[in-house]
Amino acid sequence: EEWRAGLVEGTKRSIYPVLYYIFSNVESLKERAYLAKFLVKVEVPSDVHDMDTAQLQNEVADLMEKFKAIHSQVVNVRSDMVLLNDIRQDLTAMEHEEEILGRKIERAQRKVHNLPQLQRYMALADELRRQKDRLSELNMQKGEQRNGVIHAEQKLQRLKAQLADVRAAGDNIDPSELIAQLQDEIATNNYLLNNKLSKEIELKRKTVRELSQVSDMPAIDNSDILKLQQQIDEKNALIQTMEQERDKSEEGFEENFSIFRHQAAAVERKKNAAAQRLQDARQELATIEAEVEAKKDDLRNKTGGEVLSAVQFRRYVDNLRARTSEYKKKRAEMEEIQTEKGVLMRTLELLNTRFQQLKDNIENLGGEVVDVIEVPTMERPKTAAPKSDNTDELRGMITDLMGEIDIKKESLEPLKGRKNVMQQEYNDLNEKVRLKKSDYDRRKEQIEQGYSNLKLEVTDLEDRLKKATEGYEDLERKLNDAEDQKRALNSGENLKEQLEKSLLEAQKESEQLSSSSNGVLDVEKARRQVKQWSSLLKMFQLKLDLVKDRMETGNSDHPLGDH
Image 1 (cartoon, rainbow, N blue to C red):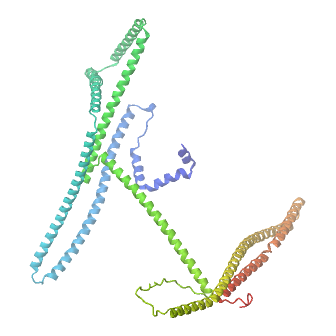
Image 2 (image 1 turned 90 degrees about the vertical axis):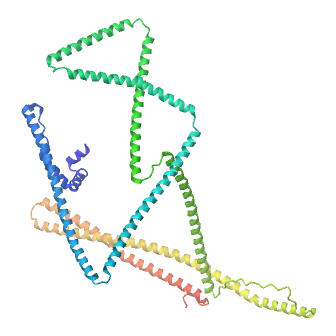
């Protein structure tokens, strides 16, 4: 209903799908429109329907069938014509290729015509071709045999698995359960055979007898129908009389008997319904099993192998789940290792960057980075003997060594003091640089923020100026038009007063726009402010560059700016 309403209203949602379908199937719709002219039946109202119209409808139906047959023949002929054209083109191409091959063969014959032992070469080539064909056939047979062996091995494995399943089921089987199942099945089959199927057979036979009687009866006219109707009425009256007599005769019995009869009838109906459902389920099961076997045979013919059973497929699914869980576990471990590797690589990069920064700072301060190389110390051999056994000489040597050690310590003290002073200077300079850098970043951020705000204000003011200029021009044009109209009109006091009033309002609006345009002229001031902030930013940048130059050159005696 919604689509029909949209189609009547002409909405795009309803019309566009129809147009898309039409433009996508133009040829087929043309053919359907052509066939609709001759194959659409005309509905004749019942009030004008008579023998003549019925005869005409039959003739039209016959002509439609003939038209369908002729149209199908025409379609077949057209398709045959298309096929004939394709065949002609293929024949022309084959003839052209035949001519080309003939010329190639002639050229090849002219080339090899004068070769010695030509016949021997030809025989060898023929033998080589036969051997290649035989080799290809042998390879094909080899592949077929390999596939057969693989299929046989797969079938053997499946049969072994089925045998193991059957043996396991046989070990766990309970004969009493099987006997109980067989007894239930036998009882069900006996009930179906003795009660349900026998009744159905009797009903079918009765139906056949009645149909035979009807077919053997002579032609029936209206008098026979009236007689049969009278007999039916008499039988119905007799049935009603007998039911009334039965009800009167059963009034003396207890009501429990009627309840039991109703319960028995209900149980019988439920039993028949259950038997019918069981029979339908068995028929459906047999149909499904036949379809499954047919599909198995089809699949076996296509693939050449056996079809997996439910137990084998369940085992395959269990193995697949186990492997999937193991794969997920291994993948999680690999992801953890990759993450740890990334963290370690990033740590190494940070350490290298930090080391390079420290190295650059030490070199800027005039120091030097010394790589500590562990020099293996040679132990004194136990067989080495002192050069002298005199205790005085040994005591003198020890005294000299201690004196040299003291001298080295004394010379090392100034170096330590210088090192401490330089370290303190380095720490102070580093702290100053850090403070300057933070101050610079803060000022830079403030300047950039102010610059962006000023830029937005300038843009806004320019837009306002543009709009005010346009409005001023528009009002000025309206004012000129009003003045022209005022000069053109010589009569009509009311109209004159209205025009003067509108003229005064236009003048007021122009004055307001003029005053607002004066406020817009502050754009130049904002631009100068932006330029001032930019100059200040450049000045701070130059000062920071000078501080860095001082730190690199080590000149700290003269004031900032004297380079």
